[in-house]
Length: 443
Image 1 (cartoon, helix red, strand yellow):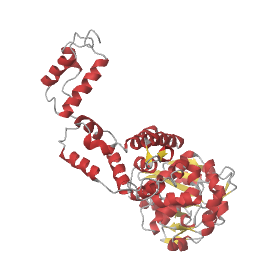
Image 2 (cartoon, one colour):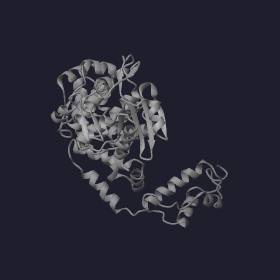
Image 3 (cartoon, helix red, strand yellow):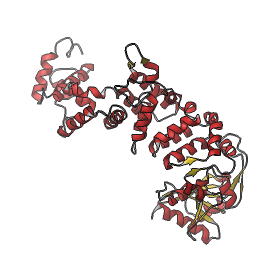
Image 4 (spheres, helix red, strand yellow):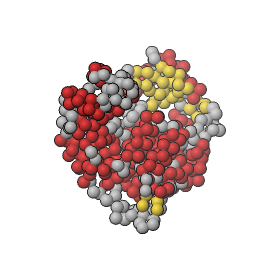
């Protein structure tokens, strides 16, 4: 059963027991736009305890706010009682809710296109706030008074930008003005919620437009001052005819196609070190901007509380993006170690985007791809020629010397200078005599 069919089955169960039950919110919007909804939410006049009684497995996700999560083989489904929200005192949650009808429920939602309902029995859309007109017009409009909606939940400032960018919509003028006025409030929103919205902007489509709008509305300098600092930082025209660092970064974001969030963040931050390293002695230069950028990328990722493994990947990508151009001139062993590094394909794509957004010279990318295509399957990670047992048999005592020997032997193996166990053993004995200062007695 598809997730939509499962959601409609939940509605049918509720209807059979005499309750009103409708698909609600984003799933209705996406269905009307012929997009694939990620989630299907149900709104009903059944109370949370009544929902729990009707389904074998459910979770009390927030009964005080009318939310019960029904667990089916197709996944979890939020079933929320029609409600009217009380005052928001923390910029995120209403201090209380009152259960009500569907029309009142629609009026407490964020944007008109997200406040639609779909009756799966009668197969019709229910619109109490003009959402259908705004879908047809391509508009993001706050439900009711825009300033009130943004005061209630400050994250809506970012959600408006994300929806407009992803869908290619305009933001209705009063809603847009309210976003600009309320922009400073975004700093009071939890960094985790801000992070999640930013990652969606970067990966769901429309990333360039999203960051243009963040800048225009004054939100960018509030949440990512490191990116806002790229504006007006000029670059040498012979390498960057496209313009300043911010323009270059926007062009890269425009080229992203279904990226991982680590690649997208690296694209956003790869030149974050340029504003602090720019010099203009003979011409515009950004010496060591990759190193400075890696430090800034770490600060940003840690501030956004990105998982450690993702932070390390983003930092590595930013740190390595200028070294990619040197791959053709590397020693064979270093080149192979570079190419086999975890994350290399993301690095290659980052550098491809970097080139396409500037001088458009892809010679190095194409050289690397040709090189990769010609490599035998086991060339990057060949089976070791020797191991610890071999060294012990040769008279060495286990110790720090072992790792030094293994790395040197593997380098020569990658270079093609050592091909057999016998050759490797002879090389080791010649360079580290077992009775020498670094041999068994020294170890």
